[in-house]
Length: 160
Image 1 (cartoon, rainbow, N blue to C red):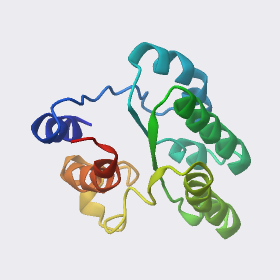
Image 2: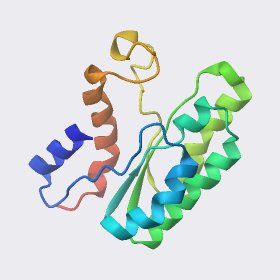
Image 3: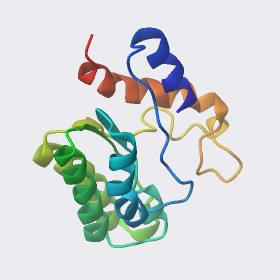
Image 4: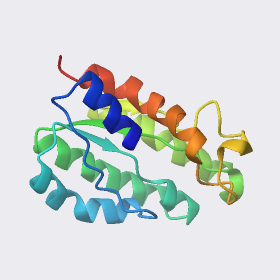
């Protein structure tokens, strides 16, 4: 988020970034905090990047979809536009789970007409040198790549 905040400050100084995320959180946690966060910060744009921890814990995809939909609906009611950031799961829980998980982001983006980053780790998910030793979390070298993916979806929503 720091790189995104720096770029916004340079290119669109009338916008700022508030990082309301909690490391390790699931979509249920995000959904539970959403109303308070929207009321507190009154954002013009919400970047919604949740669900990966749901998948890593093998939580039901339908539950994640419902939580993400709730957050998008709340953001829209508050007047905010949404950038939905997708993730993919390794095949640990089987191809059916992984496919349903991945499809959720595109389905929600289409249903709610949100901007979409289909897969945050696109083009580098297999490059282990860009991940921490746990092989799950991207390292510092991957941050500019992720920022660029989000920027491409975010930029059209920014007013000049």
